[in-house]
Image 1 (cartoon, rainbow, N blue to C red):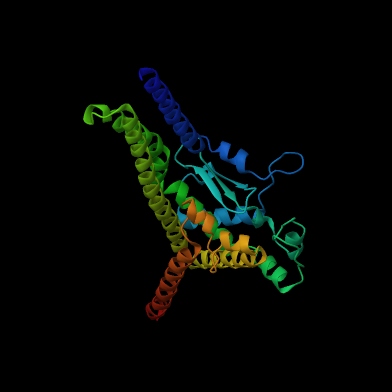
Image 2: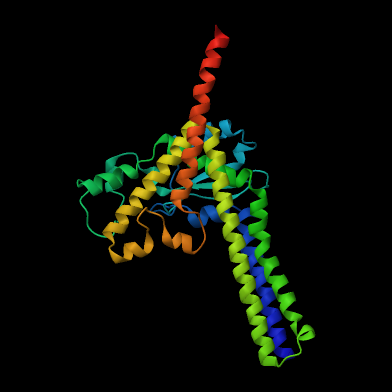
Length: 311
């Protein structure tokens, strides 16, 4: 029994160290994120970020009031979503990976990108044209994405601390609680092992629930911070959500039964919801529309006052 407990203790220590290393390394050394997620050309070099994206970053950073903007580096993510790591207050700075489809500027760029829609579809068809248009990001979409990721690296330090230190700490506390069961419950070794297993499973589920809620809160908060920077950025968030939902609905139709398992009728990513990474796109879209309407109403109210003042 002592040998078994020693093995368990070793696995727990390994798990705690591994979790802390994985979670902290990406934030402390964001270059790891850049090298892992970065899109590379045939020679193995990272693809250059388009000048229009760099221009949008400079503009958004100024609206955002970002300090140490020079410590934030842009790169192109090899996937179709944005990523970020690090912080502008840390020694190694931060990185923002823009989705690879932000490279596309023309219809030909999309057609020649090698995109696969699940089955052969003509780019000149109604579906092909719709998909093509959804993969041509406007300056507002680019600005919103940059603002969203800036919120993650600049204002969400509490979330970063939780996601970095909570998993290993949660594992340690779970182990400490489970190790106390023999002193509390005088049961057979088999029942004690089952009790320990139940404690680990319950605590794991509890952690998943807390993590999901905080992850969703962080995403909603980043959306709000970015959208409130400027009405154009709020408009970009709406455009991004609408285009993504539209593509997902098309993918759902093209993939048949498999598509129904991946996307909902509205275009929400069912797999994404299952692993608790992001809230539903329709919910994010609803919140951003509310922000945009509020900003638009405020600008309309301010205009007469400004005109009266001028007179």
